[in-house]
Amino acid sequence: MKYENNLDQNEFYFEGFKTFKVSKLTDQINSFLFNCNSIDIKSDDDWIERYEKTFDLKLEKILANSIFINFILENKIFEKLEELTGFQYHIGDIVVRKTFSKKSYMPWHRDTYFYKKNAVGRTPPLIKLIYYPSFDSEKRIQLKIKRGSHLFFLKNKFIDKLINLIKPVKNIFASNNQVLLFNSALYHSVMPPSEKGEFRVIFNFCSVNQLNQFKNSKKISSALHH
Ligand SMILES: [Fe+2]
Image (cartoon, rainbow, N blue to C red; front, side, top):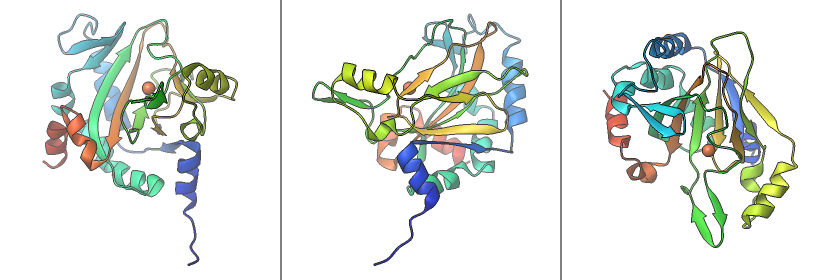
């Protein structure tokens, strides 16, 4: 039978990422994050040091404010995900993070990979949506990625790294009206922030039968269906 392939699905499948415009609630997220700067995040109990000099806001505090859930709903992210991937996704986790680390807290890596006869990380890989707010006019690179690398991997860690390092880099910049969606098996590298530190909001999407791998997914789904 003849069929027409969906071009957006083609692109997301082969490239492994997509940046797209979001128009709703970014200003509210920005003011929420901006207000977080009025406390000392490094010593506040609501912020947990997840990596060196990199702090995550407690989920209760994220869900106490409906803007993060509304951001997903009002920008029709679930619909967009289905459009781009062909599948239905669910939110496993939401992370509001500020990093002050002068060196990357996560240099070149994949979240899901297969080295030394073992799969590491979640399968199928999570799809991540990241919003990098921009509080000044400086356009900073937040993440580097290697397009298509989720479909091209080697089972030897060092050769996998070597081959991917020589491939061209795609830079992802902070933006108040754009988000990044990507397959987390893609080779990616977190860039260190400016002097003041930088925020990011990360939504981890998974399939329905992966929800039980996230300890907070029930809290998130009840916030979604409230
Ligand atoms: Fe990662």
